[in-house]
Amino acid sequence: MIKFSKFTLTIAMLSAATLCQADNFSFTSQVNDKSDTLVVFHGINGVNKTFKTFDVKTNGQLSKAMQATDFKGDYGKFVTVIAPNNINYQRVLIVGVDNNQLSKKQITKLGGNISARLEHKQIKTITVAADDLGQNNAKTSALLAHGINLRAYQFDKYRKEKRVEKNYLFDVNNGKTSQNAFTPLSHIASGVFFARDLTNETATEMTPVEFAQAAQSLKKLGVKVKILTPKEIKKLGMGALEGVGRGSKDGSRLVIAHYKNSDDAPIAIAGKGITFDSGGYNIKTSNSIAHMKVDMAGAAAALGTIKALALSKTKVNVVAVMGMAANMVSEYSIAPGDVLTTAEGLTVEITNTDAEGRLVLSDAMWYARKYYKPQVMVDLATLTGSKIRAVGNDYAAIFSESDELVSELINAGEQVNENLWRLPLGYKDKLNSDIADLRNTGTGGPGATTAASFLQHFAGDVKWAHLDIAGNALADSAKGEVPKGGTGYGVRLLTEWILSNR
Image 1: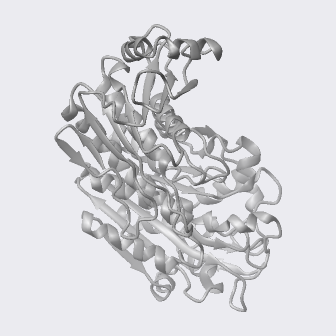
Image 2: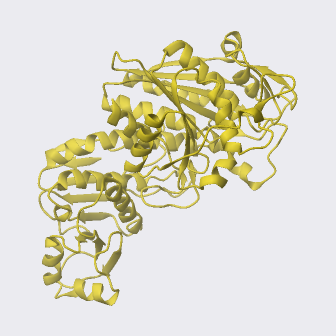
Image 3: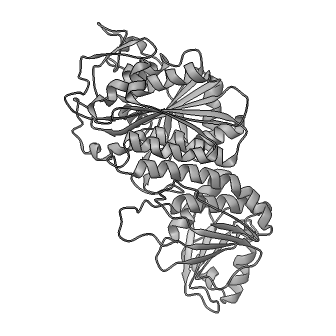
């Protein structure tokens, strides 16, 4: 819970079964010397008021520590002084901020790194001298707390030892202003945590049925939720989505979450929701199969975005359509060489059962177009290993014929440290089939591009972009404001894009 002087709000409004624990934050106008840790900031040309005060109190101990470590106040550099003289704090963390002119993404990342530095059992109460962060310290403090909170997330449901929450006390000029700056960030964090919870959960506990139940929890926020069963999916002719789910006992689900708080034509988000990807009969043989619970991260991000917008009561009309299935091996599974008929009417020859994400997305995109007539549509999916080989894990890949949409999404991503790199659409001839309208994999050509070109057949005339987030949805190690594990990648990017362009 964050407190801004006399004002309080919940920092992490998660799903009913909360799987992570938020820290407590307070915003006041006095530095509290009863904390065990003090965080001060040192800019090359900055104010450094609190640093100077405590440097005097400790007889220059802070300055000596800086000199001993060649610390000059560069952004992101840290010095920790243990048991400083003449003050009650057990430690002082000196944080470099250059000249105090930090961007939004730099402040958020800095908050994440501060959180990481203080993630020790013995550290329980932290005072942050945020008054030295510049003239607009209310907004800056809110962003810093946002970064701290995002990094502090831990999925400890299955751990005997749970994370102990910390108490942060921020020294700011105006608590009410800080609250106003933080409120939308707290809603975004809630959406991110929701997506991380869904992604981190085990495949046996997060089937298409459980995902649909999680979506139902958003009804209390005014979101209209609709779930299509396998029988209803088949009746609508969504043979691609139905086919992928045949190998599992529960079959497929189509989950629709519609947040309508505007009369504008809706924005559609389509999410790939493979709750576990065995590869089907083209079974995965590498160690990566252990991470295939993450193959529903696109759907999780779509649902997390809806939650963030609904909590904020944003005046927008956004619908998320998520194709959910477990790609398993059984006597009922689709086999290489089978032909499926999509709701679009196009037939698809299955040349590889491990290229299933594009199949569930094809019918989800069709459904969004037919029943919601969106002005624009973005899909996101952990779609191809080819994307990782092309641009790595620091960028997600974006594909679109709309330069305007690409520019909007790239700019939004840059603001929140969820970066995109544009890759070309093309090689459509590689999807030609001898017996059907399309193959589900290309005969040669770059895999990420042929996958995107496959999806383009189902975008119709709607302005559309495809985000391949393979490698972005799961972090092997923590970095900045992103912890290890499920990242919730896409929630911050999409909410920033929607809020910036509404």
